[in-house]
Amino acid sequence: MLIRPALRTDIGTITRIYNHYVLTSHVTFDTAACSEEERGFWFDSFDGERYQCWVAESDSVLAGYACSQALKAKAAYQTSVEVSIYLARDQGGQGLGRALYQALLPALADKDLHRAYALVSQPNEASMRLHESFGFKPVSRLSDVGRKFDRYWDVVWLELAL
Image (tube, rainbow, N blue to C red):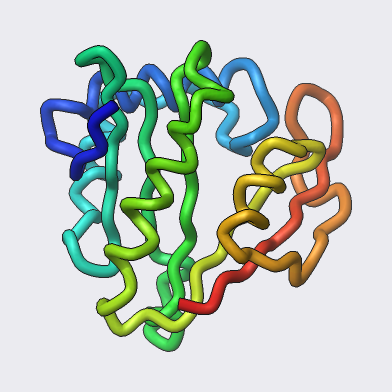
């Protein structure tokens, strides 16, 4: 397994991984698939400092990614980031999420960041266990906050001091 910073050439695979979740699950509240062009604009937000994207390669195939992004657009939030992980549909349970966070979280340590937040739609026990194993603590639960697939979903906010 190789963990490395994402490259612009990874956008196609990153888009396919993400769109799988958009179309089949409640783990993201996007409801329409993204184009590679849209994900290119998303990719441009990564500055290699506070906002980073890392990928995992397994047998030379991009198998997942983790990123830190702006929590909110307002200036006072700039020392907080939202982090997330998405794995290719057949790559769960192999330690890739853990390996990605083992690269991403330390890379944020000296970037003038105060907190990292993960927003985990429920139910999602695997994601909750992963985040809690890194020290994330639940700080809030928003009930029925997102509607997808004709159902309402809760979201738990988890917080990690950086």
